[in-house]
Length: 154
Image (cartoon, rainbow, N blue to C red; front, top):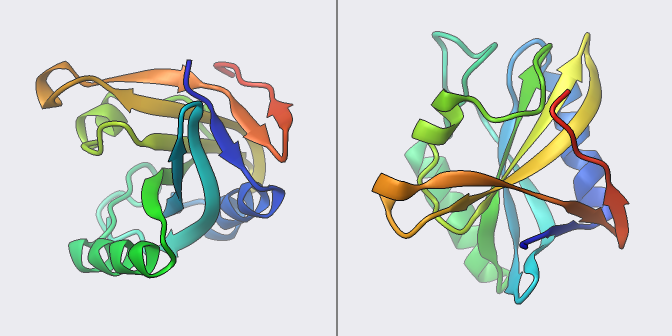
């Protein structure tokens, strides 16, 4: 089973980003290295949510910004390990929209529930599968500086 390893600084940064953008969804990328156990994330990069029609329950990262994030990762000798976003006043569980709009197979997708402006549960899901046609999310544990974060569907 894959696991997502985050530094405490990255974990706190993605949760704080969700609080800062509440009641809209935040979004960003995770930069790290692939290991036999899963991704080791060393940095997060905040991105702008370009969804103007429904930013409270959808997110989108502009293609040009994504290219800039990829360049920054390469400059640092890292890869895009995944993405994160928040679910304002909604559980930290993927939606059918999240799955349909996820295309980076092998990457982690982190979701933080933000309840009334305060970060609550944070879960991670690996986008597994061999191709777009059979992609699926598999829940993966989050380890923050070697401390396991409890995950659930609440």
